[in-house]
Image (cartoon, rainbow, N blue to C red; front, side, top):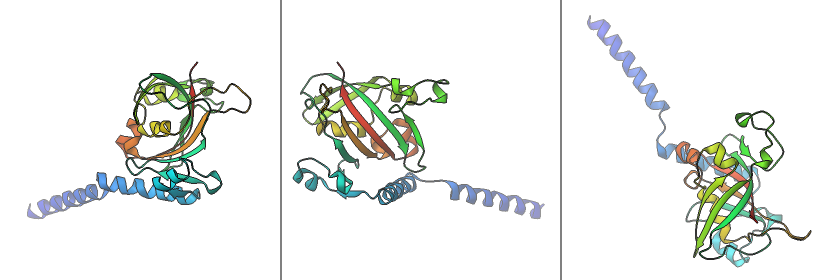
Length: 220
């Protein structure tokens, strides 16, 4: 009996140790996230600049150098591809913004969801043109604080939440939100590296960073 009890205790100890080895703390997950971001930056040949340099350049990122500015306050990295046409968000005025985007999991490299190309998404039904699922969000700016919520669209449908990722709001202090009226005018476009704390609920719960290519256009 003593031998049998000893074997049982030993097996339980081994199982417990194996379980502990598989368990990841929040700190472990954040470290893995940061490692993935740093690896992505290196692989993409990105030059990271600080906010002081960004402001000295007139709140622009130099595309020829593949620059991204890192915002210390929230850890978001942003590259402005096009400033856009029209004007910046007005103070204390609700504005509906239409967005096209591509969302990529930085840790796996998989494109999760997008509405910027003609494609179909099996979870939404065979043959559905995702480019028709423009994301519409209602936004409002008070000083430098911007709030927003999804009204409709692919992000709203895929992630099942009206909550707009905090990372999506960062560029709205720097780009213009208008509608192209002439051939030489274009919508605002940015690239973002968004840590989990500024991402979707799915990103937050899994401590996963995402990369976005994103355009902004004012609704008529």
